[in-house]
Image 1: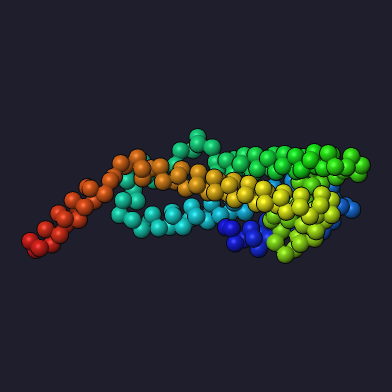
Image 2: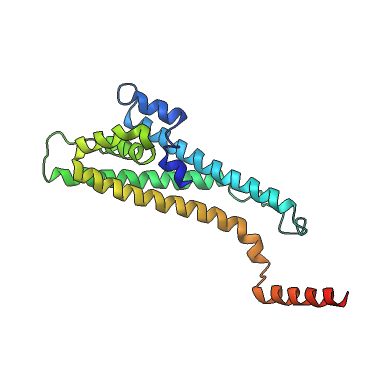
Length: 203
């Protein structure tokens, strides 16, 4: 997942099209929307692919039809909804970071300050665009200064990692919950292995 992000996997499809038309035919809000939607799609794709691998492996297990392990509650909110909420929260915090950085510039220069939304859009593009978005980092440095751009990219990078880890960990925990509910510990497993060993010797 991290490799795909670093390679610019988010900046594809509509997001890439928006970036290429920015700023002439695309505003910062539209660019941010497209990047957030692409990030959401990439995360959902990763979770869905993991689900399919787990389902395939589980079908080969002897306990695959055990009650409670195979049922999914249709009332539980979907992964798409949860991931969408997390991406929207990530975007809000990213925009707050951009706003903080621009407010810091006010103390130095009150003339020609960049729009915080522009800064947030450039930051999101630079963070997730890979080699396709090298120019976004350069433009960001021109707008808020090299030090500000480095500081903002560091904060934004940590934020992105934090949200990715939260989303993936939460989805993993939801899928492991039925196994945790069985309350199986190493001790009974060791006893079963010992009993099996005795049975095999008796044969």
